[in-house]
Length: 481
Image 1 (cartoon, rainbow, N blue to C red):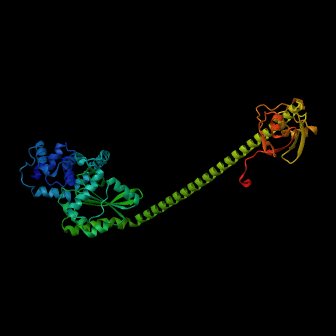
Image 2: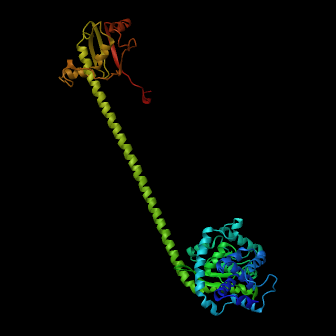
């Protein structure tokens, strides 16, 4: 039967058949040939079609694909493969020297390039077989963990939760070995590998901090792309990538597993597979990890120094801001004080000018002549006796008291505002008298300055002669109470 299938194929088709069987582990050459023929002998598309078909429906796939092929292929009710067919299938799984791979290396190179394109497309799409149920690649790792634990228990290596690219980036960043387990639920040997990975010694060994363990089912898009990237020839497969200066490099790979030693033997083989790269690359990885740790320490030191520098700059800026605000407050206080002093000086000048103008008005009237005699006791204790006309008003007494300083300066020859007759009150100035005119016996306060002087004093028996006091007006302070 196998000879009949191979007899109708040329060398290129035989090479494609060999590659298809090598990746999918298919023993049925009729099925393999039919799938390849349905895809125009495109190995990549044929493998994709094979894995996209559920396992329970691959009998129908065989019927559909063989129906599309020649009549020389195996019919659906054909008996299992004969001895020659099993030998050909076993050749696809077992390593060894063969002339066909040597002659077919250009095709393998083309397939590697095509695999890179497929991998990029798969990563961009983010979905594969599981797209039909809407599960993204990032959830495939968690789904595999749940599947593994449901089949083999909770004890297993710490599978990385994330895509293969994420696991690879984490291993490269942390200078750790990446152990990639390429699963395939369609292969009977996967059960054996699951029991081996669930062994305590394997789980404990792969739980070391120097390993990142990632696992995925080849039926999922992420693991399918990873199998092409890692060059897996059969499933299940295990690949070990060691960190290096240029990134992670493939250091060891196990294509397919052997059931000869059972789960115990396979467990030992897995540990030996990983121990080899660790032994070969351990010193270099340790040096790189130490160098990376040194760079990380330097980076952290720079960050701390930068943070301290920024904090120092912030403190300096805060001190400068506080100092600037203090200087601005002091400047405003000085300006306000200068403005107050200027206004006080201006007010004093206006007050003085008003006093000289009031003195001029008094001298132009007859208010300071007549029969009235007032003895005035001023604020400083001086006593002044002045005659006043009966027609004078109380205002004239207030002006007389207010102009005593100006009268003394005028008598001394001072002329601060020119000739006295020409002095006028400053424009806009309203004079406020800061004293009161009172009589002690009886106690009377004369506050109506518009009243006639005689009319104000006579009712109290103080006309034509009276003794009046000039009392300052002020708000009593706490010390005066």
